[in-house]
Image (cartoon, rainbow, N blue to C red):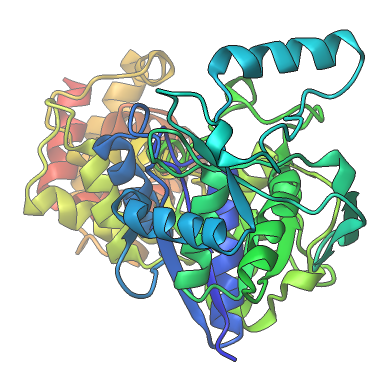
Length: 465
């Protein structure tokens, strides 16, 4: 059997972090088993579904590197097939036409609530003769659900779960206007797509009992289910905007690498010993859905940020340079030609050691793309005292005499400090302010080398003037 999983989001909003983790688990399980990972856009809610939301979902999955197999299936294009199956159930006596009006259904609900019962359809059209149908009422089609026994699901994460069939009513599968309900469309689509494993959030567990009844009514093989726990905030409450970023593309804008986000999401509810750093290839090798925990996972942004810093330090310098240049491009005071790109690329090994996000990395690299005169942070301006400016004028010839390699610059700085009776920091800090406009940068010798002879001397002269 070829394992087929699917991710089936509704395009009514952003791709949230919980949905991204669901997609990741489906992707990993299919790749781990040598199967297929399919994508279905459940856009049957035409009033709320938008093309823009669909594009956001596709963009988010692409950014995360979760490539699906085959063509994307749009549920809205399959309405005729959904109706066909509903009528097959009708002809087989496993469904029936319901002529209840909206007013009757409202009264049914209100009476049940008043009597302390759960509001359920009372089955009044289940066994009635269609000849009794009122004139001018278009019927809905309801599933003739079993009334005795239990519906049982053997869930790979939750274990054996069951519900008494007496607790489930005869749900509508085709509305009176001929459109399918979510519960029905999902089953038909999963069957036709050959889905073997339905991996989704445990908030869908109650839906599963109803959907299993449709599989059974059609005589179709039921897929294996795995309902994964939801993601909560650090306070245990449902994850929301107040906890921080909740959509995938927000994390991209905040400077997180997709592989770091995937690694972190993997560890939200799944574990392999004490392993924390799990690159994608290793995740595919190790992942099994049965290892997912039942309890809700808690989002810890500090841990994600730390992990992102680990991935940044291991990332390719050329890739990071491109990321930084893109983030700096909107700053009009910056010069982003090949010269600036070369400086950033040269200093990247040192820059990325301190950065935890691409935003921090871009901010740290911005000075390399600026032109004289530099803007100075208050602490940097304070470091450029009259005495410091005189020192910089004296230092410039010593630096100019070197070949501007890191070792030569380091030696020249140490020799100048010793010759003038200063500590190295007393030389380096005003020099750093002159070169960068701030008091924080990578090693001053590496910074000088990245800027190059002409630019370094020009910045020193401008600061000393």
